[in-house]
Image (cartoon, rainbow, N blue to C red; front, side):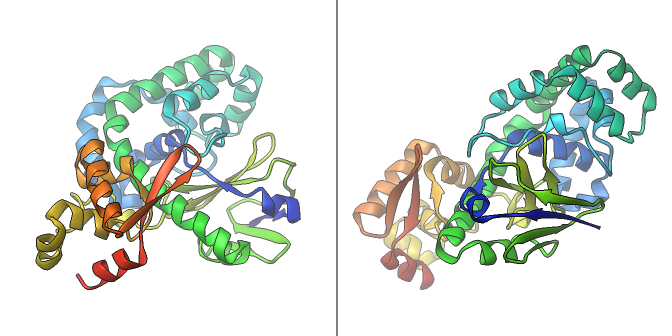
Length: 320
């Protein structure tokens, strides 16, 4: 079974990337319910499982069963490239009650009584679920988000450059084997069928670590969204990047060598800081020295500055 979307030239021109803390948070509920599906996240599960006893997640888990449909209002497509959790939570809180009720009715959850309670008063249900999401975020996810953020950011920067350099065909070819671009249609292998075009607001592509290795889609009444597995998820729970080779560290310093090697993919100061376990100020200082030496260069992307290696930096890192 497949989802088939027709994309015209304007749709292709309006492809954009974003990532979503809310999507990762909600997807992680499935990881907790079925750890064997994503054993790669066991380090996180072991850290957070003792904290779950203090939380009331029954309603959330009913709306997000281990498999099948989950209530779409919990994961609104990101409306900016880098949404923050508070803004996304506000969007969940503002869900129209009848929409929430209709979506809850489709869910085949493990606790029908909880779903019936939600449907009886969806306005109150949405408020309770939003409060539960906030509590779960604060207790189990917020401290790990910078690590997830850095991985997703690297993927978005990589794919954006690929789209600009190689076009839509090569971009879609590299997202996932379940995604096929014919030149006119985007065919996505999913366990349900749908056919149609986009509805005028483009397509947003969202990498995911906690829904990995699967793909997911959303469409009307929401913006069309394709969620695809992020590259490099195997490095997510590593304790920092590998140490810099001795010769390179001796030449430019250990932390600068680590940063130079990490810039095999462009990154922001904030993401590098999270990955290096350094302060953003320290990373900024090291980048200043590397840039002055002609090894890195910053480029503005929206409101952020993204750093990448220069050709000289590539040559030096390649010899390490």
